[in-house]
Image (tube, rainbow, N blue to C red; front, side):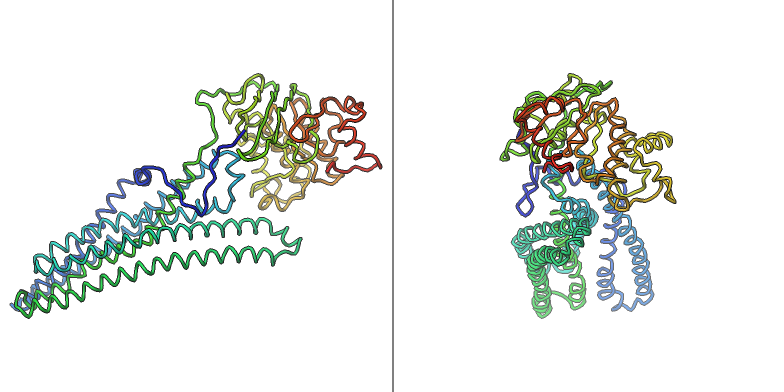
Length: 598
């Protein structure tokens, strides 16, 4: 079956879905009240900013020539009082405006994390953890900054530009029109540089994700690195990724520098135009010296917001690129479940694979070919055979980790395509060779099997998994922290902890995927007794390389090349003179020592 899960195209152009702006604005909805106050405060800040030039003009044209000293003092106090108000408004905008951004960032992060939980296994097969993490952290931070500063900068800049145009016209219309004619030049410069900046910042974002991925991989594998003395190799890998990031930054900042330098030059031209045109107007008597001075002071009302918009472009590119990467993941198809899917209840444990064929991708080889297997309630079916034969794939298909198109899998006669994913997985317990434990306490990890379980139920599960006695020797008992991925525990302790987790879950169907193959013989004996207890009364599918662990299985199937080549009890398969199972078994025990099939 071909998995149709789209792969994130790192380093290539992503074509965002329609209504990208509408999707972004939707995140303002829960904060609309505070957002409105933030915009009102920004408008008041802009309005107060226009007071100083107006007062300056009044002083130069009226108060100073007419020697109205008392009014000069009152005007100054008025400006001072307004500046105090503006200080408070700026505090409001800075604090609550950022809180709006943080709130939106939290909402987006929750949405993205929840969506990641619903994506199929195939998504994680194709995407590195570090790159996924960068979309949850740095990308969303840039989006939140854009969410706060974007509307504020655009609104206040537009208001200031329009307001300054009207005000400057009250001083001198022809001079104002000359100044504003230069504005389209700035718009053209912005349009030309914007695409270059967008592409450069998108490339920088990809390389940032690459650094995160390399760092996550290296830190997680630090013990392997030290064991193989490969620190230099890891440093080289990181430096290569870091160099790509630096080159991407050079490109991004070169585009940004070109934009800023050119845009700033255009704004500087405004001052030259004012100097020359204003001087000529003054020489001809078309403007008074006081109006010319007021105009020169007031031109910052226009240049200021222009510079704000120029500075805003970098933030806009980072935030817009981040939101595109956010929506790219959000647009990935989650695990499919029929709208009318039924709950799987009162599970007896009949499991059937009926002519199942499967491949992980459209271009990939067929991992399973017409596989048919039958598991009876409370019975144990063991899968053996060489690596890559399809045994683990079968273990992944029964809990519906991958969608199935060819053939059918049924539980108690019900096709898993017609059942809810949660109810399927609620009734299946899995113990794997590579045990994953969460960073937390022993209690947290056992209770993960059933969070609503009681303390007594948790302890009983630990006892049945043969780990309670060990936990009792620890100073903090079940509250002992086990470190990242259970690093403070031995392999056998981690495995028994995972078994306790399944005991607490109490599923009707059990899958053991090479659960003891990584353990030494002594530890395996201890673990095997816990597994035997766990299997009692449950339908069990066992994948094993050590044939001694499955000798007493109710039925054994030999899987090789994606096909079921032999099937029967241990005695049945041993009676096949040229049988594959008999050869494998004889190989493992021919000199009285146990070795793996591989």
